Length: 96
Image (cartoon, rainbow, N blue to C red; front, side, top):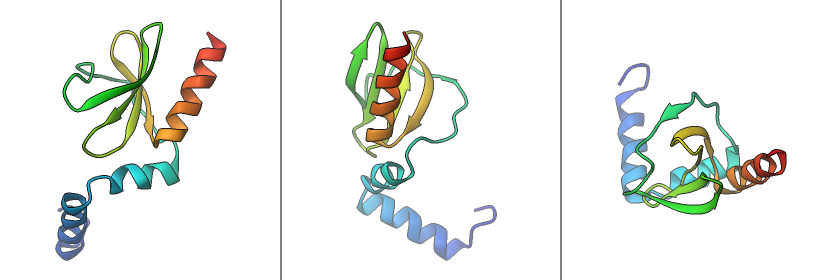
């Protein structure tokens, strides 16, 4: 892996495989993450809707526990921990 010692990369990947929710817990501590609006397929396989208002959705990944906000066109507008995404979604809905 580029810039990451092989032993560290293996340890990180082993942790993710043994405890996939670790990603969600880490993002929960970090809050929201930098985002580039990205087209998605709408999250019909690995994602579950936590909130849906006017086509805007907060989704949670069932494997890793991370969350994201999708607009009505299935464009990812934000991603991060669950509580940060729910707060951001609430603020977004207040502005609408």
